[in-house]
Length: 261
Image (cartoon, rainbow, N blue to C red; front, top):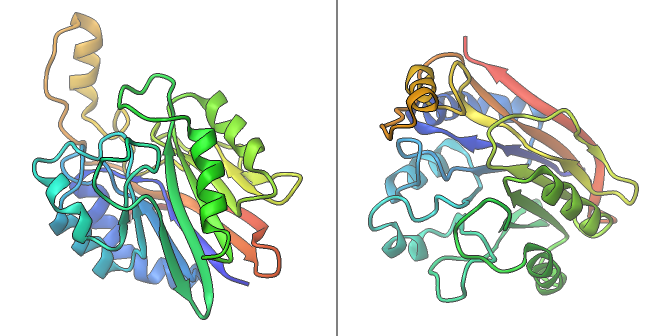
């Protein structure tokens, strides 16, 4: 049965360095056929560049997803169309550049991948994620054998609701954005694997990947300041989902966490 390894938000140089160093052996250990990763924070903690996309693809990531930081790096909007391993959130305005989904194939099994942004607490303009997910599943029905849906959302309730909404129709609905791995991973009653947040691939001696001291100082005095990416306790966090090729739904789910060193 095909296995999908999904990696949570790759944060800055520490996150992408560890992913590049460890991914090949981790993929072999887990027997993963597909590797999908959110990399919207891979460039200095905010956004992504063409060069980083190329590095992560060479490292073994088959599909790269993005979120609300998709346009944070200068000129990326002019690069994304030529990057065939990258999809931006599907429910951004139609005139945004970039692919709204990807279809990746291994051994004749086709996996569709797309992301929807939440509309609670996120300021980037987007349409209804529930309606967009319905539309994308219908669009992809004849193009792939199973579909992975990333819920890039702040509100846990919105992620959970989307999981139940797509139960029995998507192989998995996995949340990203909050960088904190949750303990609610499971296969829902109709066969969709669900996790509220995959966590991040980055430094956990931090506040969501950023320097602890600077973030605390900002909470204490309310002043704006730079939040550099932290360096210590780097981990890879995500999940492994086994998909039944006969149904396109999940057979098993497990969290994945690998510590550096």
